[in-house]
Length: 213
Image 1 (cartoon, rainbow, N blue to C red):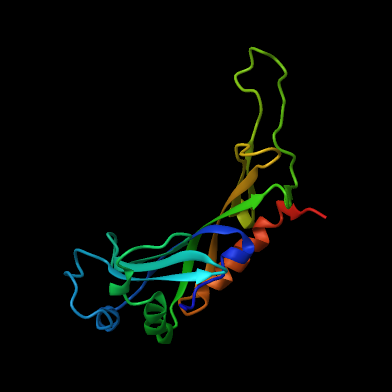
Image 2: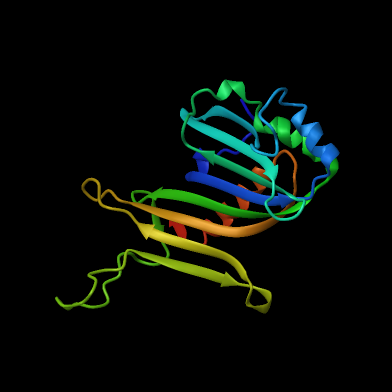
């Protein structure tokens, strides 16, 4: 199994991470050597990926590296989603890319978007949804089913943003709450970086929803 984060245990449905990396030409050639023959690097990204299974749930992890359109840096993109992708055997696993970059000790600011889905049978948000504010037939809306909350840090810089939304009722008393957590995270580019980012996202997420007793 690939060395990827356990999204299943924490109700994570999507993990998307981006960063801009200051790589020298010799470093990109080192990464490229892992892939063998590929299309010209100046036109197509170097791609890595693998399917894996956690607790009977199929996931796909994918990472790409390509020259940035601005400056000499390189754009790094990683995502982990609950879906299996065909033809993935042709790619090297993501951990091969991380192992190649780890000796460079690259510190990066990762821009993170992490999605969660919590069943209402076991979880409840700290803010009761839906909210009914205007009990008038002429009101432009009937109820509020979602909110966006932000945490501000030093100099009112955004520390994180959380969008909490109540889904449609599927069965009797069966609904789900979805969250999209966005934040920045400082870390080295190395194996296990996605686990640390997921752990930070879970910490933020659980500030807005809790398990039922």
